[in-house]
Length: 351
Image (cartoon, rainbow, N blue to C red):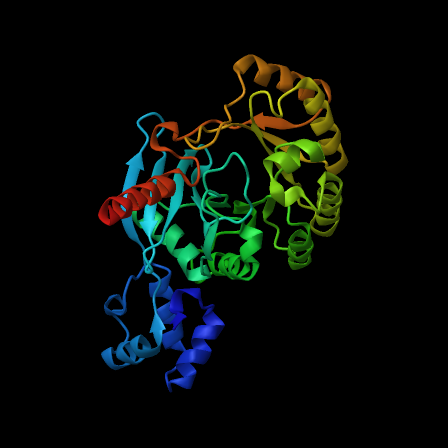
């Protein structure tokens, strides 16, 4: 059955026109869907007969909050949402000086296999629909009680591995009749699927593209990120240069600082060279601890030495403020805890 929340205004018009309804009904429906309507009974200004007709052939993606955690340190809010099929994803709302930012998931699980990430444990279960991603924003906004002005696709999953639905989601949130969040207020993070970066460049969406680089050389990066194999850092750099040439949008290199793995002065010099080639901004990220992973965040002195190299090389960089550490804000951690609990219960039942 089709998910009405995944449909663009023109598609809703065509659907309702086929049902013999006037066009203004599509506008009413789109408005309700973008206010967070969770079921057909919520569509108050649509005739009951029409609601019943829609319910026969369609669904409205809705989320149920399994867990909400609020950081006592910085107010970061993390949600664990249950999807209609029983799977779960995470969404995080963070407070910055420029407004509230929501970080959403694009998949249930992830097939990229990054060695330091909780999201990849267990692999990919399925893609999210555009409507489910939109529901993450809407339901988080309704609970948070404040308009969310910025979106980052940096939660569970690889957005460009779910390209078509992510692209549809971007168009939905950009609709003036809907949330009307401008593309320049949206960031998309990818591990470097170069073929899809080229596709995205052709869309010229004016969003901010972030590359989860995490290592400046193929040996280290392939060990940390299996998706690097068959592509390589040089290919990623070339795709970034092409993206910048096509869109004029500056790229960000995301770089998780991992103690003794990617935080040496030599690696800092190599990263600085790559950043200069791409004219990229570098975002240094203190690694979040993941229980099942063996990696530790860089020690403060190694972080300082690394930053000093970037400084002297004239590279524009920031050290990301660590938010939500007391609520497992690193993507995939709450979902992983839920999965472990389910597996333990199933194991106990079998025993």
